[in-house]
Image (cartoon, rainbow, N blue to C red; front, side):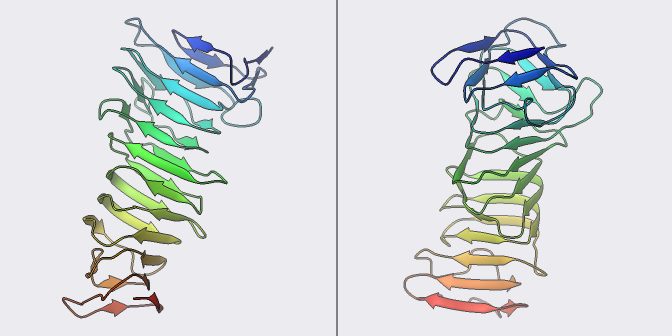
Length: 249
């Protein structure tokens, strides 16, 4: 069957699980689905049998209240993801298989216990500016948009991937990651703490655009771009395997 959701001014609240089976169609109507899972039901899940696609995606997805919900397969949210309160989303099923969440808008995860990434990936693929404000850790984070910025310090315990043509501006907030796979642009003011165990010196650009006087990312780069005010002072030998561009400063 086909379900057309209320428009953005309407209310669509689900107190249990959300299941969209093969052949079914869900038109989100640019509205918000709010999951208020509230019963001790360990089987409450989000299941989109045919996976993401037209007639199967969410527009805005909100999760709150005191119970968790798990993913049964990959999902796509075309606009914003908001998780708050005592509830959570677990990006795996009961068999411990992890799944991905693709987001086209902003991410706001208010507590560290609101999201359990497991081995899944969160992908930002919007066509307009996106922000990430998350108190929870990501396992794998993929940036596929040219305008993504942090509104809070971020931790990626696995791999942070920046696609070709994409950019993430950490915007003065600290960044911790296991591995950086940079084919795009990592931008920072320079005063942040950047802790990346395995850095990428074979591809991508790191851009400084603030007032910092030192290189917070370190002393080894592929492409390095400086668009800063004031003077950058090296504290060790600098290794740039690609291009060095000094625009300002």
